[in-house]
Image (cartoon, rainbow, N blue to C red; front, side, top):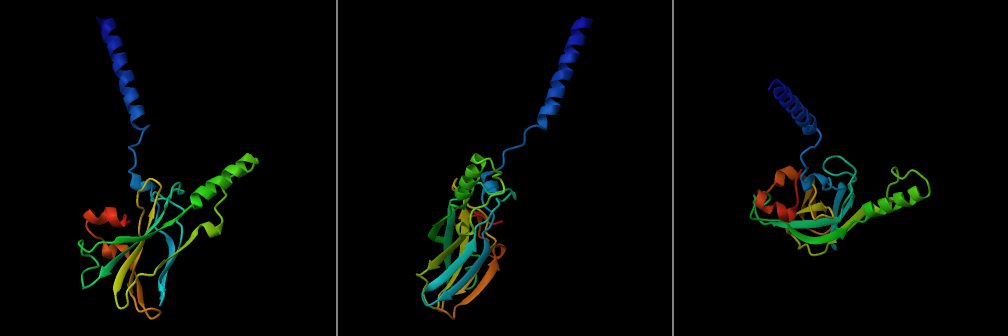
Length: 200
C-alpha cells in the first residue's frame, strides 16, 4: 500500500510539473487584426479642378510593430458630410470609391530569396522605393460638397489595417478647403467597421 502511495505521489508530481512547464510554452493565438498593416505613412491630400489627389507611402509594419508580411492594397473610402454631426453619425457611412494594389511585400521577398540564392544576406533587403509610393485621384468629387476620406490598408487575408487620420475636404477645385483630422474624432459605431476598416 505504501509503495502504491509512493508511485501515485510521483505520478502526481510529474503531471503537475508538466502542466506548469507546458502552461507557459504556448500563447493564445492573436486575432487577425494584429497582423493587418499599420496606417499608411506620409499621407498627403491636395485638389485641383480635376479632382482630389492622394499620395502616401506603404506601411512597413503590422499592428504588432513587426515587419509586414502581407498586404493586398488600399481601399480609398469616402463619405459625404451634408450637415453638422455627419462626421460621427454611424448612419453616414464610408463607401469604397477605389482600390490600389500593393506588391511591395511580394517584391521584397522575391529580392531576398534571390539574394539568399546567391549566398548573400537577404533579411536587410527592402523593396525599391518606387514600389512603396502610391497615388489615387477622386475625379467624382462634386463642387461645394464636403467629404471625409480615408485610405485603409488591407492585407491579403482581407483584414483591414489601421487608420491614423482622415481628410476633410470641401471641394472647390484648387481652392478646396482641406484639413487632416485624427481618426479618433470620426469613429463610428462597430456596425460600420467592416465597411471602413479598423481604427487604431
